[in-house]
Image (cartoon, rainbow, N blue to C red; front, side, top):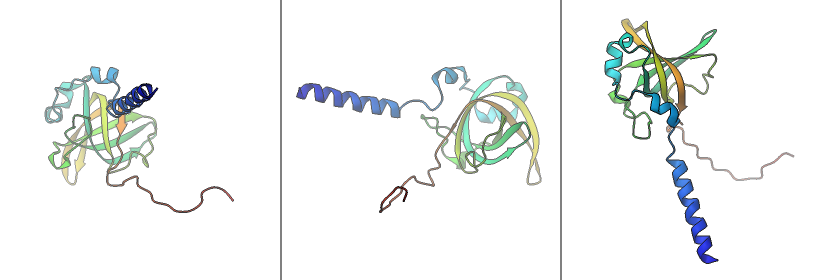
Length: 164
């Protein structure tokens, strides 16, 4: 009996650890991404990569909802092995994620880390300050919005909860 409990407990621990290591982008979608395209190369020639499926990540700088689409400006960052954007001070540039329909800007807010697998659609010309800028445009296939680590999910409370 004790042996069965130990085995169940061990199986539970393994299941919890395995769930914690699950990829943030589905395996099927991740397999379609050309992970060998560095962002610095994509940024130099977005039209040369048009139609390619890429894996990118970074920090959302701005989210604009237009009539038929949502446009997110993202500061590109290297990705960790868990695909989380890291080291914003090493950003090689910016890109746009252009999604059909509405994405809530309260969720896709400035400062939130995001990982995206998407198709390179081309380039949109813009301006950063007074400097012309060519943004690679990515049409998302799958997005993962990370928790903002600057806002921990820790709450402390004392009292009685419920409705009175």
